[in-house]
Amino acid sequence: MIGRLALALLAQLAVLLPAAAQGPADSFPKQLIKIVVPYPPGGSTDPVARTVADELRARFGQSVIVENRPGAAGSIGTDAVAKADADGYTILFHTSVITVDPSFKKHLPYNVSKDLRPLAQVAIGPYLMVTHPSLPAKNVAEFIAYAKANPGKLNFGSAGQGSSGHLIGELFGLQTGIDMVHVPFRGGGPSIQALMGNEVQLLFDTVTASRALAEGGQIKALAVTSPERSPLMPTMPTMRESGMSQGFEQVYWLGFFVPAATPEPIVTKLSDAIIDIVRQPKIQDWMKLQGLVPRTLGPAEFKTVVERDIETWRNVIRDAKIEPQ
Image 1 (cartoon, rainbow, N blue to C red):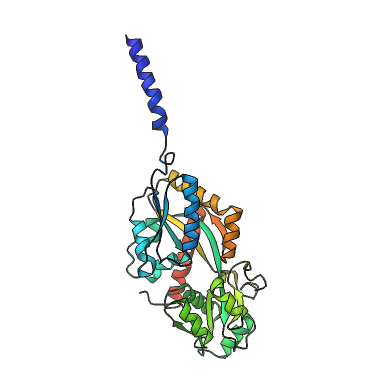
Image 2 (cartoon, rainbow, N blue to C red):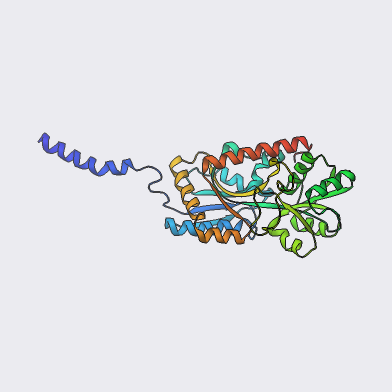
């Protein structure tokens, strides 16, 4: 009798043990995954988020949707993910702008370093240093010399106070010792129009936004800010090739985040899937057509980049005496 009871218990254990041994990632995902983009539809981040979502859907056999949650310059959508359940079903897709927020925004409802977990970086993009065509400077060194000979007489524009273009312009001024006046505009379009109208004489803008105007002669391009030349403008020198220090190499990046407490096995599964997707030749070729450089980083390496950029912009905001808002 005891022998038969023992055999029955062993049989039940044999059924239960495999299920008990399964980790949280083994059955993930078993429901819809939502990728939150904290900007309006149609922006530069949308195509990449939707392309990755389509590939994840095919890979996991589950619905993967992109939800645009704009507002407060990206803070509303970011906060929604930071406060979401840490189960891997809510993902944030953001840009390097997120690293400016801790120092520039006074009342941020989340802590970038503590409430969000970097998941995967997927691409980077350079900025283009562009000037008004009437300026005599033909390269970065000549621009610096001209600015030093005309202190306080040159204006540099940006898409707004605290924008990437603003901070890169301030960093340029700090590293070169030139004195320029910052003129913020409401968006990238108005800042480009102001440059074409000679209201401002300098702008750091994305290659995709400025290339056609530069090639058409309406504005003058001097250099890209990335460590390597842009595939869209292969003859354009980098800032470092133009004599700037390595510390000025600045790019914007695109990457995914999850709530900080998301289990490690799920973080690994999502990160591995996203990186594998981006490394496909068809995705890499598509990204290059968008003016992006595919550059994948896993959670640990991506976290290092995020923390480094937070520190960089904290120092620029302090040294340039930019008032947080």
